[in-house]
Length: 248
Image 1 (cartoon, rainbow, N blue to C red):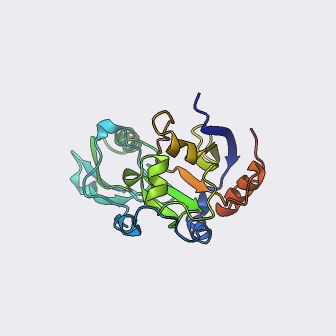
Image 2: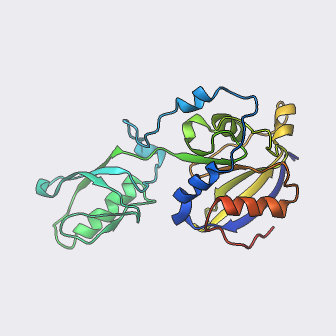
Image 3: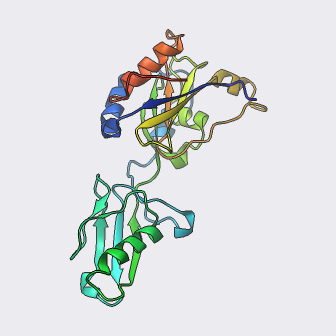
């Protein structure tokens, strides 16, 4: 068992405040500890979209902000060349009510749209393509030089994410780095684990690196905070909307 992973817990989170959290996270950063030059992190593209769409076979799930094209084989007058998925996850199409797109694969959305149109069209055949998609993001905050949102492709592990954010500050608690991930069973909860980053650096041959996923958080607390309860409080303060209950 990897002793660098210390604790796991679930805490609720209000996703509507994620953008506000990034502003708050930036206030927590201090001076830069000797790490990777900031120019490398600054070189990452700011755009959330990419020119090439992911393959349908990758089971990509549609997100808010994605742009889709919807084409009808027998009713081209209903074609929609660029439909943007709204923040609430819905898309608007002609003749039918709004359709939920967020969280579905392209194949699932195709089936949903064809079913919706089957009440007014005879055997509708729809083709859906991702024109632009929101790149997977991670969020790094606390005692790092450059807190903020980063492209997951540039920081696929916990340590890569910290380096991408400019590295630890002088006040960073490297022994208690938090990794929080949306819980798959409940959208309003995060699964949180604490890792000893110093152990991971000192014993890189045996320590298990932490792979990140879209929507993950990496939070580096202040070294003055030694109790887990205080660290959790700091994390909740950095992400507005997190409930006060913390369970093990």
